[in-house]
Amino acid sequence: MSEQNGFTKEQQTFLQGFALGSDVARKVRGLPVISDSGAASNGQTVTVGAGPTRAAGELPTDVMDLHADAQDRQVAAGGKLVAEEKAKRAKPPRDMWDEMQARANAGEFPEGTDVFLTKFHGMFYVAPAQDSYMCRLRFPGGAIKSYQLRGLAELADKHAGGYADCTTRANLQLREIGPADPIHVLTGLRDLGIINYGAGGDNIRNVTASPLSGIDPTELVETLPLARKMHYYLLNHREFNGLPRKFNIAFDGGGAISALEDTNDIGFTAVRAAGTDLPEGVYFQLTLGGITGHKDFARPTGVLLDPDECVEVAAAVVRVFLKNGDRTNRNKARLKYVLDDWGFDRFVKAVEEDLGRKLRKAPLDTCQPRDSDDRQGHVGVYPQLQPGLNYVGVAFPVGRVTSDQMRGLAKISDRYGDGDIRLTVWQNLLLANIPDLDVEAVKSDIEALGLDHIANSIRAGLIACTGAAGCKYAAAPTKANALTIADYVEQRLELDVPVNIHLTGCHHSCAQHYIGDIGLIAANVENPSDPDGDTVEGYHMFVGGGYGVRRAIGRELFPALPFEQTPSRIAALLQAYLDNRISPDESFVEFTHRVDIDALREMCLASPALT
Image (tube, rainbow, N blue to C red; front, side, top):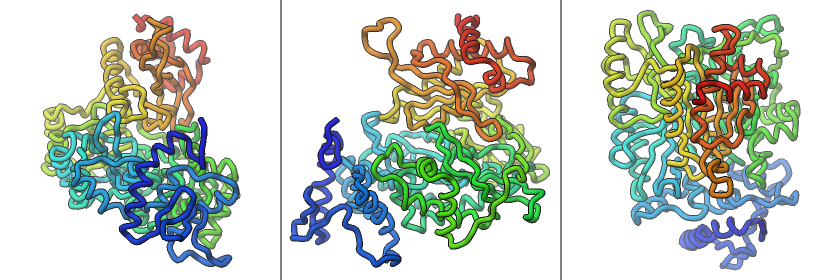
């Protein structure tokens, strides 16, 4: 693909609309207009790479200059900024409110790089999958109140599609928002106390935590307060907007339901330290570089932190990434690649330099390993730390919940609990603080909403991204396909152990297919009925993925599998497991790790479940 001035032809076309609008906006504000050559209309020259001039060691007067400095260094070293970096520099996304309001008044969607910049406000124009916006929200630690859930139902009915999607970041999305409605949605969110700036674009996404924080009898430490503190720190420090690429942070308190912190750029894992020079107690182990879509987990740095150090250290990590992340190649613009290039020792030293102090370190074997989590603890009824109280995990069909169901769940929480609701990374929610005497009534009310609290092993672990029905990158309708798979398998066999099936629509791996017991990533594959004709929707199938103490990247079992064959292959695989496991105690993942991949494939193909 040919390039001109660092842009492909596609990128040049993409930027034409932006350039015109940017020039008009700059004229209105009395600013110089930037031309392709760098010459401004008023005689000034404005060139990417010509950032603010400061003496050596002089601190920037505006924290956002840190980004310009990082861009300039990479240009000076011979790199070419990607289109997104040039767009952020030309038009700060925080300053787009009036422009977004004018566009809504005109009933228009964004064009060019404004599509990218509008994501900073949590608004994603998702054409051509849907000619509408998707709005991504923010709930630090996944904590949401009943009144917020009820208010979101009203927003969904008035300005969106009448439903919400629960995501793998313990978050919610509203979809099918028309061109005139984004401002109504954003102001409605603020009225509900939901601040979603930075929910998209090159920012730090929803900060996750253990969903049972404060109510889990087995947790080592509460994490919701830390997620909340991190959330507000990010909102009030402008420099954490406009990073080289998106960034994820998670806190795991060591309890019954994992926060999947080892899949994040920064993971804080609660551990109990013993046998060191440190006082015995609970610390957070700092792990860095998780990005399972690129087949990597966060790895321990050897740094142990007191809870009150976590936010400060996370900020320092992000600043080092801000200054050194790749702004010339979007495929290499994540923290993992800085770590791969530098090594962990050099990166931690840079974090210490930013902090102005050394960090506490201890050998990894001095930390007691966390107990394995309860893989189905997010669905069903379980006793809380507080005597006489329970939480109830409610399963959503592949993460989708209607506005009527949202109102119903809020009503249940108010009537029987105290309005405390927790979203999970497993695309569902928990109703907290339900008294023993009310559990049966809560179960009945959940069932009356068309939802379930006793999902079987397939549906409890069924994870699907938005798919082609709402995402332009996806190669298959993953949510619909997931339900088809569940129906097919349930009609043919019954599992007595949990099995996670993750379906993701593209290389972004929003459903984290590599860590599923069974992982599927959509692809256009050869049509078995017409090898010389058009391709059909299908999947590459992986097995044996995991996280935490079971962490593993799934191995490819069947590449390029047409979807029409996928449900039967999954049923055959599960039947092969039931027929060939050593004992009922051998988990599905243990089985897939024990059996050679070729033998596993042969077992699957010979299974009667294929018929």
